Figure: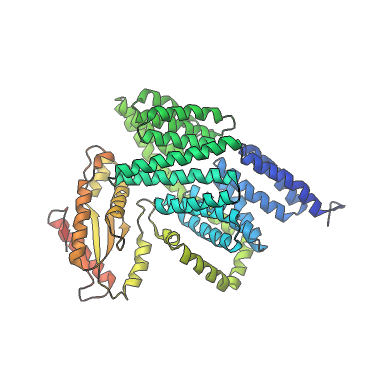
Length: 552
């Protein structure tokens, strides 16, 4: 009981009265009425704050964060979920904290902040496992799977997504089963695209067919439970998969069916529908038909559409104009695509700054931070256990976002370990030949796509014992098990694979080669940095002697 405005209020009774309304909001969010859900949950939140019901407020904040994700308002969702995490943590409610942290990680990934997302997803999975609550485990495992997908590790993404679907089925949650099946289908499609890029078209085809099957299962459930939001995602994904397989008529049929679920759609959904339709028309060679939806999608930016989509829209527009032979318009659209890409990258930095404000300007979060040192030993023990169970996920902190390879930070950590390494190893230094000319002649966007493709080639060619790192710019480092002689053979295969790659898929007239310098631990020094320096000298020799060669 508490006194509020001279009245005695039974807090338990009020909470019970409010909870059915919160449940109604959740039902709205699960049936494609996310704006209505957001409005209702916001009203309950305001009332809970006025009455001092912090627990109900935290539950509202948790649910609101999800509705914000659904309608494309991720930054607004961060503010709510941060408060929720603080409350659940302070009050020791680990199941609720696990769910909130899982949403937090998902929102961070949506904003292009993978390292922060990994941290939250790791904590969420740890907490969910400790509570042994299958619903929290299902949610957290799903988010981990999405992070693997984002980092272009489809095999592990599929494994985690399959587990999240199993857990959803175990508890009979059809909504979770539907949503996680969508992500499982997406992970299969990513695997298909990667297989095709590595020259394995049959494997790629089979994975895309499987993606279609899983997405159709999700669509059946979405239709059954009346979730128009999930149905739109399913149909958009199916259209993309069909179009990639060359089944353009089926793709257009999906988009026609998509229109049946637009009653409760949002600006973001409408925009995605339009540019996906434009992409399909482009893929089928119907460039005139592509222009209308793409231009309409551009107009939705000012109406609240996603700026992230701006990049894709201009890319598809440039392709449509090029297909029509309108090269001036194609060039102008491509320039705007480039500008949008750069602006989007800059906004990622701004998002990090805004995230820092959310972290450190929240009084409750500061209070949690002050008590954190007292629980350091307990947290370290639980975190260590999680790291042992999900070591690949933890390693994702060291991934380069553009290429999917390890980054310089990871190389520094490996060099510390290699200092005491007794087995022979070799270090190769790779550099893209005439990379500045590629940027100057084809654009920096094409240069980025070249680096991304090289990352794909390296992952496909190297042995499981080898590790590829993006060293910086157009330079790569490969850590290879064994002596320089064996390493040189592997590097020659890498050089040849890159030279033989069909670079016309990236841009017509493009040809890419690399030069490689190799050095090994069998030299007199045991310092990895000194071996790297020798490899760099050999790389210089390779370039000086004509490029597109390996020097050891």
